[in-house]
Length: 143
Image 1 (tube, rainbow, N blue to C red):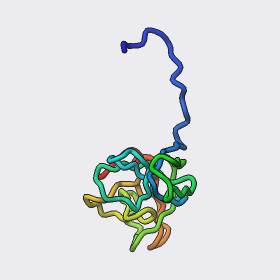
Image 2: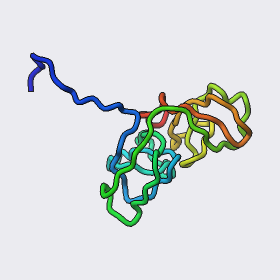
Image 3: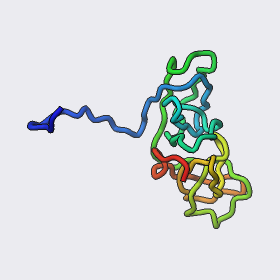
Image 4: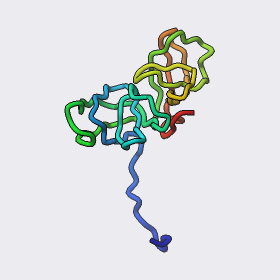
């Protein structure tokens, strides 16, 4: 191919709600979704184990493909916004810090080789709940 010499229609999509083909798993609405580097399919945040997995966003819907084959179902994923997640021993000092997935619905502030950054903590709600802005983490792997 060569460089463009005329205007073209790039068929823009809004990009805040994306549909991903998913692995043979169940993903619950409102949980973290990651794209597994090994096969390119969407998986629940429970699969956080590979440093090359990429944060896709938060599940817009719940889809159960656990009885199917990888790629047989797709899931809609939100890629922007702030969401309330479970935390353990959160304090007001967490506000402004990066949030890392401990599982598909729980965040912490300690990174590790198997924890993917899922956003930034923007609000302390209680010691067991914080609000996370995900925009800056979508498309990233372990930090």
